[in-house]
Image (cartoon, rainbow, N blue to C red; front, side):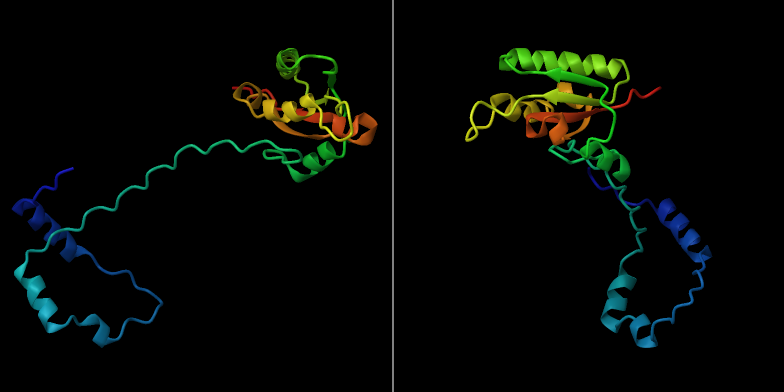
Length: 186
């Protein structure tokens, strides 16, 4: 943006406004006279140049939209502490359950998304997703690793508020509690 020069009319208007302004009385001590008086060379340079009104302060540009936080086990943004604690401990009533055992990754992905969409439309909040623990103790199950990753995909993020490992009576680490977002009335 190119700077333009201040016109004489604008300068005269600024001087008129500046003369009519009175400082606000402050309870602070005023600065000492030494600090208020400008030095002689500085006063001469300012006197030679015409006074130019200060540019209006720039408006702060809005921050770019925040990237949604990544969902992880036990991380619960958007719900109060008490609700989050009850969710993690499995004390909320389970509104629906899906068992993904024996399905291929693609079938499990598609079935889970359809299940979450139906649950969201029906107003269900707390769901149990059974993934299984895997075939051997040394290797983590494929679906057990994949489901948390899927829940962070955009299609799922519009539905899911939080998730965490289930309590032992609901399957432990081979299952997840999934908290579905509420339907917002417009």
